[in-house]
Amino acid sequence: MKSRLLPADIKVKRWKNTQVGISLISHIKSSSRRILTFITLLLVVTIGLADFLLQVDISLLVFYFIPITFAVVARGSIFGFIIAVACVSAWLAGDWFGGAHYSSLVVPAWNAGIALLTYSVLIILLSGLLSLQDDLEERVRERTAALDEEIKEKERLGTALLQISERERLTIGRDLHDGLSQHLTGTALTGQLLYEKLSERGAEESADALKLVSLLKESIVQTRDMAKGLLLAEINNESLPAALREFCEYTAKQFGVKCTFTFDTEISFKEFGVASHLFRIAQEATRNAIRHGKAKTVAISLKHVAECLVLTIEDDGVGLPPEHLRTDGLGLRIMAHRAHIIGASFQIKALPHHGTHVECLWPLPVIV
Image (cartoon, rainbow, N blue to C red):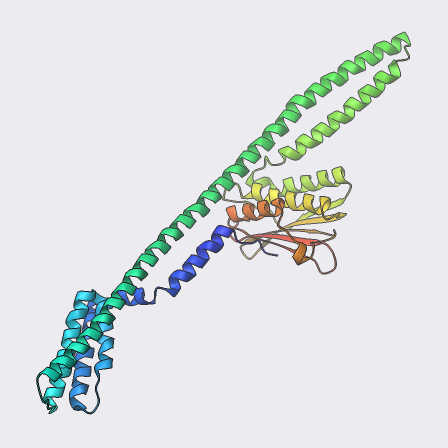
């Protein structure tokens, strides 16, 4: 399952599709006005000539709609009215030179008036439609710009939250390592001294003191392991393979599973922060596999393929739930967002029999 588009992205795509659908006239309008004007005049002359050649047997009044439409689109309603008058004049001239006879001048005047009225209705309607289309295009541009800005702001906020999370993670890790761990060590030493004094006196409480020292030592080990897991985020671009290998060793020890790491070549990055995001994606995918997928084996690999860096995490857990029951949890969204930040593609899919396959492909050049 590939990472899904954000709702704002979907909205932008819908608005852009709408903009394409209503922009046919705007494409014509955006063409050279000189060309459209020339086409308009050429059509008037051509239809007028055809009207003359056909004499009065066939009326071509309906065909004058075409140059009038081009005139309105090219230069507005005023130019449209001018072309309408020219069209009516060409039509009357064609009939006149074609030998048309009228019982009275009122007849051609009436016909010309009806034709001009019809053309005027067309010009007014077309001008209104173009005005509405312009307003709609402007609204689409404003909405699209607002949605683009909203997406950028969400990306900035998401990046800021991840940075804050990393800083807090490192702070807690250092506090555990340098603060609580040292304090527990001092407490264990005090307990050891107490045990030795009680042992010299032969007191029965010496066994309890020894048990207390043992518990404190276990707490020290657990605290240091927790701090180590948190401080693994403190890696640079060159130490990603080593950090992943260390993470696999720590995971295997902490959860009692088989966690392996393989990579095909030494890898170095130019871009700052890529290694940290890739490491966190591997960490999140591994913990999801163990906690939610009940996996007993996790394999992490880092490969350099065709100018791309491919990070994969596979497990033998229960796999993904059925499609109709599947929901994108916070961990999946965070992994997809981390991949998006560094310009990588991200996908997660179920393996044929059981287990899950997570892949992050970073298509930027990598120096090997």
